[in-house]
Length: 609
Image (tube, one colour):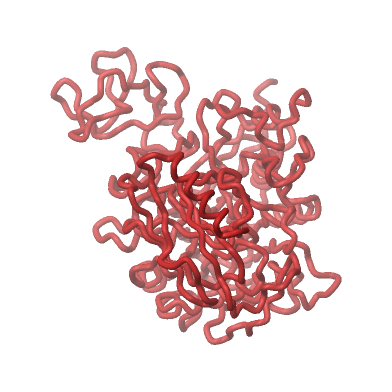
């Protein structure tokens, strides 16, 4: 692009945003390898969604595709620094807020790069990694039969954002994890450069804090897990990614997967397509080899496009795992164990946001009704709220299939409890969902999920999730839809209440909205769900009120970083699901619940008979 034309374009864009933000680089011309410093000005009210991306100067500033050449979150100082490892060419850097492509720019600036030292600037679609795999700080893969009772996990790992070793030190020395699970975005390397992926994986393992107390430190803590979009491909991508096989190879090297594993490239033509895996661990006493069954799902390699900007929509045929992985999962869920921990890069239990235009979803099949049927089969047709972020709910048929398979696994006696662990969101939360009776899946069962995401990243945002665990559940002014959180303590007519009350009402009620001084907001009330119907009794919960976005006590979103922990007490058949925020003294345990798994599943009962 002619530089004069580029300058005129930028002037035109700037004139369209009067008194809006401006963006600038510290230079207009860079030599390969030079650091690029980006500064935002005239922007007094940044949001948690602000980010800065770099693209070749060939795109419409209001229709930017995924992936970008480079990207990073905007810091509180309104500056972003890039390493400068771009190929030769003309680029533009943009300020953005969109979370799904095509992205629209709020401000733009142009620059050029020449004399690049990168090794992967050829014309090929997928550029091969040529740098050596760094074997100084290596992971240790798990071994079947190992005694495991404590599992720690998190996701969205940005080593340069860390401020201390507090998280890793707590995980190792206080929680004393037997196993660490990475749940995706294990480094950020959007794009088709396998060289960049290898460099970022090496940097992730060699990070100062990670090598001091993380799983690679001595004695090593076994590591496994799954991936998500930014380490696999680029934002929200699935099976349309051209370099998925090569990306899998880099994942395998990073996790030090043994060469005889089906995922390893040494398997040649027999290499498994996708990084899904499973391990069977024994109880801590070593007497029972079928203790925790840990399953890692791959929700990227075979996933159909979820929106038309990612590829051709497939309607009712839209799928998350691919039939080969589904068959493997059914086989795994039929293996007996006490507990199953199912890892996936994106959340499972948050319901779909039915307020969005359903025609936007690739999985929507209009008159075919498979979309609405799948939502109804898990009892969520009447949910007025749900997440707008990427989750399993964007493909209702796959989500319903997964939930029913897990429900059936419990009813068939192959597990006493099943817990999903997930990442992606840059916050943490604990969830529970009761699956309704199903003729094939069997009796009602409760499934659980812990989301842990952000090392060190966080999104301070209020996101509706009717399946989030609540201290006490309430409806809205007698609506009968018990998906709201009671706000304790609340003050009403000069009296402070820390539980539901019948004062001035014919049944127990609570405040669902209070002012900063805990006084009840007039009109913000709801009838309380009977305590015996709560999925997690209040007596089995622990929670603080710090580092929350709202008064939802099991949603932690303002901590410096977080990780999840599952601890099993085999002597009492009780499991603890927790979120930890080690950077914050006083409330290191942000929230937790206990789950008893001693009872055998009840025989299926058809409520319609």
